[in-house]
Length: 139
Figure 1 (cartoon, rainbow, N blue to C red):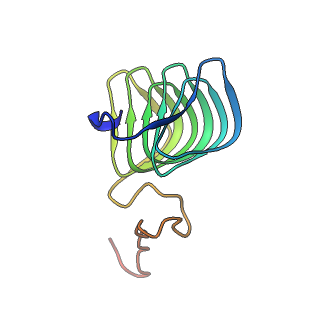
Figure 2: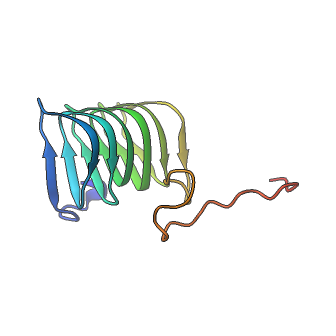
């Protein structure tokens, strides 16, 4: 589990090795993937990608833990953990990123306190909008 919070969420779904899913996956609590997923993942909670997983998706989650292979775009509202042996060929947007030795990330990474949601209008009113710089203001 992310951040050592064992028992913080109930595992309510599992895609095992040898299983394949194409489409949009949405769930509550925690979901673990050790198989193949192509499409989109949407949850306010936790997704665990096991070491045997192969994911090609747009991912919108609260928390993400990766030990397998991911290709696509990741928006995590809270945190992304990339464990040793994981391979991400992805664009990552998250306020907090932990990368263990032996993990590979290829692609742009955006971190910071207001990062982690998809661009456009916020889908969750509790997520503050990222302020746009005022014209003529230098930062």
